[in-house]
Image (tube, rainbow, N blue to C red; front, side):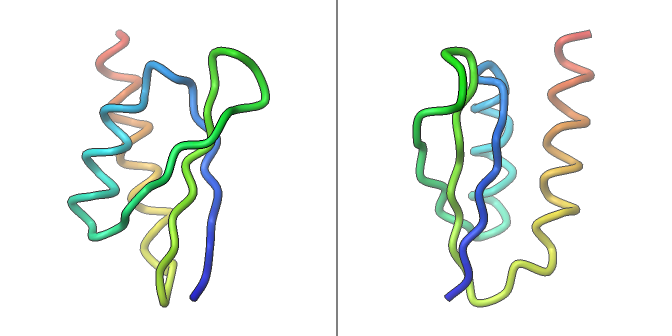
Length: 66
């Protein structure tokens, strides 16, 4: 099983959770490097599509913040 960590701003959490769970990942939250960030850990047999999912989630979150 492979594991990846995704560091995000805390306000992006709902968007990232939705994208990751829709794609079949089960993200686990961990404290971030600063108070306003957190780390999402995902595990899967293959993480090939993860980059595209992270890009889509980050793009959507950026558009929402406006």
